[in-house]
Image 1 (tube, rainbow, N blue to C red):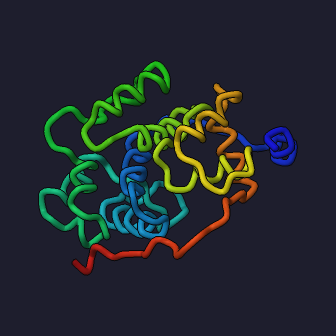
Image 2 (cartoon, rainbow, N blue to C red; image 1 turned 90 degrees about the vertical axis):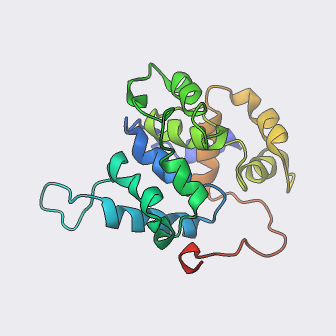
Length: 206
């Protein structure tokens, strides 16, 4: 399966953006919500706090500055963006420790250690950050709602799997476990679905 997908997607790359905070922001907004909820929250945050990007492509916006994003927690306006207070506090936790200076980490392993020392950032969020900011091909999103099922289905024909089963199946690919997950996503591999989808909520209504 993996060899076939690698041959089908020869141009797939995992570049490192070097931009940690924008990815931290997106990953926190994606915690325990649907993709639609996360996208709406991030888009609303960027529209409110982002500055116009230089150049002719208007109205392109830059990711917001960390200091600007901290204001929703203090003003209580984060719910307007569809973000409940817990995730807003994770984005702007106030006193140190905070994810500051992570762009200067030696590698993804150091960045992961420093990220997971910040309240509100666990293994899933750290993996989502270092895979993009550091281009880490081995970052696995432990605790994800879908990925363990996808890996179990693709590599073992099992419709459901937990984190332990996912990691066991990915162990032969250590060093490139995150790349395997990306190949499965690029191919559109999905485990069978049972029951209804998660509901799409709007915290702005609360």
